[in-house]
Image (cartoon, rainbow, N blue to C red):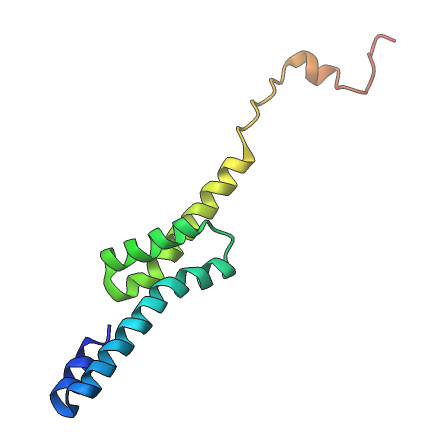
Length: 112
């Protein structure tokens, strides 16, 4: 956040400018925590709760860089799992027998 700037403003410029800087830091920090997931949601077709979890989890796990890494990792994982589930179960392989090789479908019977 802007903690260093707030401390510097209190130290060098006085109470008014320090308080103004503190108010600015609180407002912009709150807007960032709300607007970032909403804007990320616009760019990706992901649930908003997943994006919030990615932002918070990334921040806790990786620090400031986690704000960007967390949602990216979760969105890639979510998309891969969604595609995997959409494919469904694989069909069992058809058995190839000697009779099927000798008489392929649509070719008719050799005895006719």
